[in-house]
Length: 113
Length: 115
Image (cartoon, rainbow over all chains, first blue to last red; front, side):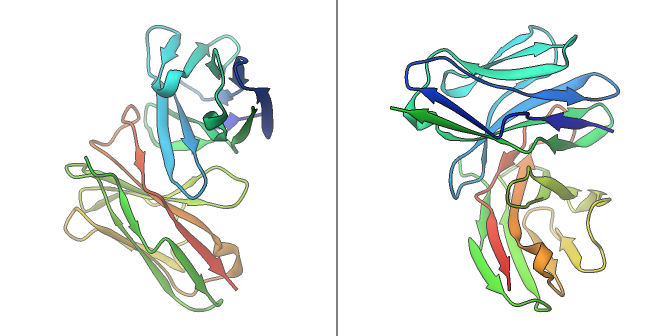
């Protein structure tokens, strides 16, 4: 079985400050990890993914994520938050032989001006 | 490049009625997925197609839900009869190929309210 935990329902950060959205996972094999963002009344938009290689993955809109195998984490980060980053963020995992993505419950990011 | 298209965007029905949702994937994408997203939760896979064949429907409530992708392009998801707990957003996604490494691209979703 595979699972994802996003321990924070909401993260508040001031514009210009760095942001982190946390994600931990559980899989039996090597994980493939994804981050998606969802704006109101819109579908999920792909941000970035980790398959193998460099633990620091760079994605769209200045976001990056760090894969940490020992801590089974894949936290999403951005050096300087924008008000327009306010949205719902989902972490997801898959693994070899499991085609379906398993999503976390989501974290709402609120960036205050 | 056009994204994944879905219709309708919103639907309100009464319980025990039937409803159908339509999805048109990104051109050239062979794999199509239907997800159910209940308020406050992450999306959950209902069914996955590879071309017009079903790859995974293990989480599809087959007593009331059905889906087809007859020509390997468009897909329809049907609920008959609907229950109150079916109120959710139904998301369609597509990817170029099947597999764990492929990025899935999502449509805007259909928001269903069952009264």
